[in-house]
Image (cartoon, rainbow, N blue to C red; front, side):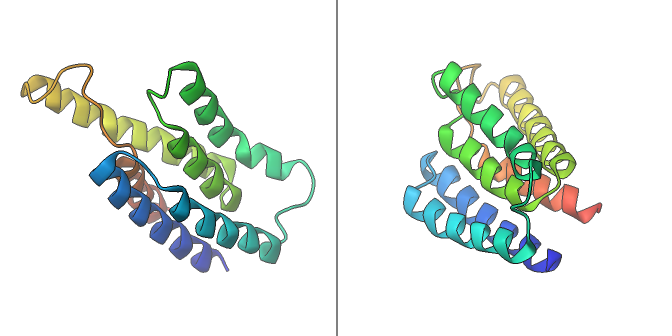
Length: 141
């Protein structure tokens, strides 16, 4: 069942990365069917018992609050995707995933600044970095 979860997450992140890279938006019509599939997988895996579900939602909720507090410096869609992915993963894996994605985006930002291809206000889509982090983090499990 874990392999199916990983394939579902990979497909979800790949589609999100594609849309985010093109338009810096993640369409709700993409999120809704995957949210339904992820919730179905949670029920199938018996993951809706006790406080564990709330704990797994913490990284996503935190990123949604960051989006709210920073006038969407990081978008609501990014937080919602992390929240959904986190439902299927252990919180430590979700945190490692987010931290790896942030590190990758920081490196890309530094390269953009050094090469003068942008400035500190240049916006980067986050989902491609999350997809790359998924490959790195899951590849090391």
